[in-house]
Image 1 (tube, one colour):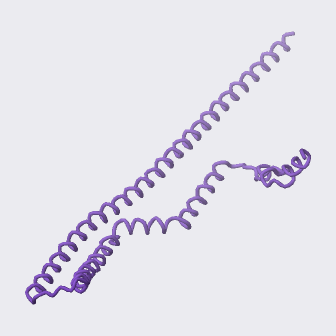
Image 2 (cartoon, helix red, strand yellow):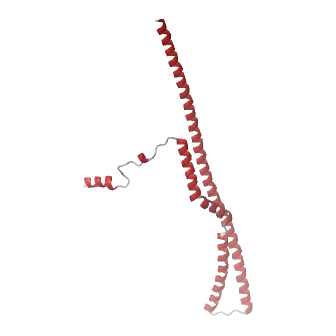
Image 3 (cartoon, rainbow, N blue to C red):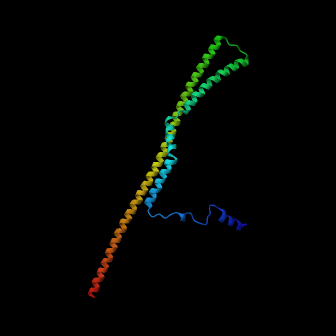
Length: 196
């Protein structure tokens, strides 16, 4: 049983392969150029895959009126439903309204519908503004997060470039000093050999 599991884990497991994927990656001779190509590729991926989505989200955050439109539609339907309920109740209970009562009921229904529509639209406008502002705030927060991460990476890259430059200058100065020391040692040896 154990040998069968060992066979399975080595031969059939897609996560355990005999050859190393990292070893197939090409060598990097110019890290700065490679980093520039990776950065350019990531930007192209962003433009291709996410830019239009982001622009659409910004447009929606600035101009979306879907809650207000739905409230208009719902309030109209609510008025019609309330009128139908009143008619159904009258027919169900067999009541008869005088023309004055019918006129009063109609006026009352119209007032209720108008007030309900005004309240629904007012609430929808407030909710729409809050939803749009929340979406815009989320987009701004995402953008600022990307900007902060980019600034950190640029700062790190600049610090690395400065460290490489400083290491190069130090190595160059050390090599020059070592060369002078070697030349001085050879000159001293030559002078000593001449006197001996």
